[in-house]
Image: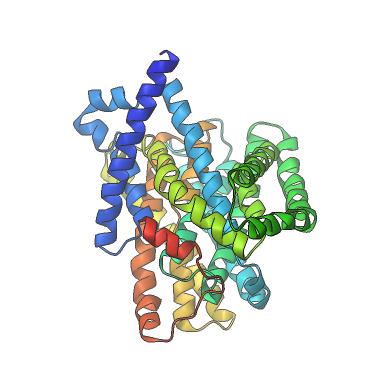
Length: 432
């Protein structure tokens, strides 16, 4: 396929992806779900599970294997990095100090419990054909499945919080702090599994040591160096094209750096976002970038993941039973464990249930981890599909459960005002 043909095909893919994601996202909002959940489902619908089942020839022409999928994958990764950067810009580190004990307890419960339950489930599956690669040894399967269940949909959780107007509040920050910690630990665990699977211990060392050094360097050294950007924006009463280009260059460099050390590119963007100047600069940056990132670039990843998901692989009652067991393990490992941890640390019953419902959502981060496991040959397409379905169901549950245990009460009570005005919550709502 020539470059011009590739460009034409990619343009058509973008048109279809954005149109379908928009329609399904609006339908999701009609039933009380965030638009991002609809975009996630739209990705699966455009894959072999529906589009490929009804119109297989057309689906293959629109999404052929090979170089065209590489372009779609690369574009989706850029969208993820930019979105996580915006989440970092909005992230309020000040409230973490006041909720540090609760955040740490919820995070530990959301890691340790899934690792135990996921490991036990892997013990049942690793001896059976069709779930893990024959080259995967038992403990690798146990740790990978535990990490997959431990993942929280951090970008998804953040967008739900923003769309519900909880950005900058105590509850929202607690959920984001616990979710980000869980995901960071899960990626470190995954890096260790990949290191052993590839028989290269340097991967794990770089992931843990390099990731820690990156966080310290950006937050302790980079943050003061970035302050002049805020002064320049205030002096010019806006973010110029040149200033925006500098910011984007820094985001892409940090994404490359963290991807190189094995932590994954999105955390590079997130940490850099935290280090960015607050106030006027942050508000203008969010209002400039957020509509394009969330409405144009982020849906690409959902579709890319959906193209690797085939519900038709679950072709027996036994496989559907195992899929239900995977879902039950996920619910107990994250939702119930995080609810109990928050409750035991003095949170009210209502807020503890809200934390459990939010932490139980997976979605985006889960899809990222599962795609890595599938591409590295750790899991099979069958287990991949089961885990994708688990991610969809737990994410679908998050918003209704949150509204039931917390949202209705919040509508009646005085609204806790976010610290930052003009935050991503307002722009995300307007953009949808």
